[in-house]
Length: 294
Length: 294
Image (cartoon, rainbow over all chains, first blue to last red; front, side, top):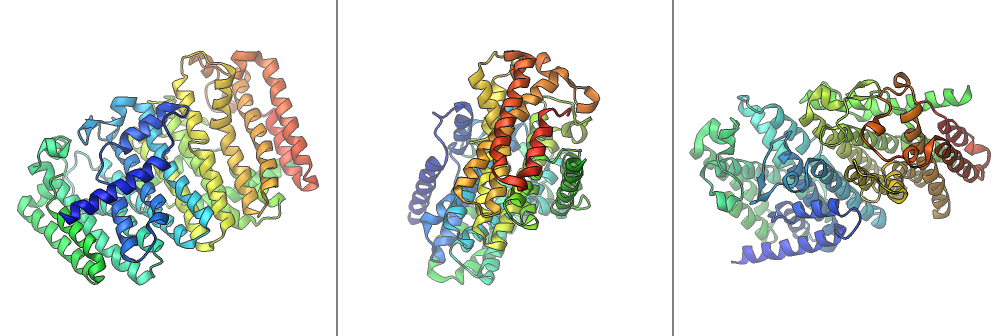
């Protein structure tokens, strides 16, 4: 299958970048490097960096120059998972079929490891911007910062945390999904487009596609928590029910949630299709995410 | 006293900047903004931003353009304090005479609040660089990232954490002090110099002064933990002894530690004096830090 070959190549390209941008765990104090590497190389799908690279490629940008930003977005994603899993937040023992960071390295190192990944992501981007002096890179960094911060992932996570055990309405759930999940996917699309030198109109168009893909991705996550397979997912199912968490499935049921995933994905594909043949990879990827099993 | 008037003016300038760059706590979800603001406005000395601004001013840079970077460095400093105080790390209940962030907002919000301050600091800097397209600003952002990250504060904190309850030698203690404390002061000097358009020679010279000031500052901290006054410090004294923590005082005693503070400060002042009259504020500040009471 062409798509899966391309994804495999993308993962390898990103993994090589991460290997290069993350200091060796031979460095002192090696526990922090071991801990960062443990979670970064725990088998993630590399979805956000692959999207960033695919958008950049589609618009004629240079993949090599985009690599630091792709790796930075994956480090930021990993930091958010490490901190989410902490006892004081979701208190999860497993992630992607492996023990969570704090179960292996202790809570103190897990907190610092998340901090280190967030800081290092910005350090890599700052180095790249300072070296190139390229305003396109500065804008890409800004887009990623927006996706991760108070206009994005961070506030989504805060509302998720303060909503725990409460019954919430669709507006609040949408706020969580848009910010916690879709904002970083939007950041990936936006950064990829900036790096390729796209104009604001194109960036806005792609951001609207990204938001739909991000929402569909998160609703699919809610569905998988009910119908998914533990061994494929690498984490327990029915955890939302156990934590009395409101999700798309608890609000609307499986069927309506499935329809919503399809509707959002179709709308995103419509937008992407305007970019013609070059958008083929992103269109196929969006289709595949619609009924992903993990 | 001229120095204290100038410091007051500096604090006001920085505080106005922080007020502007931190979103209002009327925003949703307001708990995160309240929590960030609680710790940022908890009465810090604003030492790092004032140093950044003073270096920039000394070298003829524009203070208004330096303000986002000064505020960013204070936000990064505040994030590090919030995470340091967490139960899983130092487990401190008081900081600057007030309850620590997690005692007021809970551990989950304190973790996210630290994350938010770190991310927001880089968001502010990235916005400034993207808007100005100025490579001097990109270099300042890089210098701050270095001070905060794996080449600086972060690894200092990691070694501090893994050394807890162990007896450590002078080399390890120096590693902690240089990285945990001096690296961010070096970052402040370096960023201030970059923003003023200084050349590498000047930046290196100022960095060496900054490192000495940072080391002297941390040794003075160790001394204050033994001879300080609880109400002036706003935190318990003798906490190092209670936590069986190796410090300059436990290794060398009060007198030798005092001499080391003086020696490092004099060396830093020697370096700064080469910049003539314009270095007066930084020279006076360094002198004042030598025998500060809090």
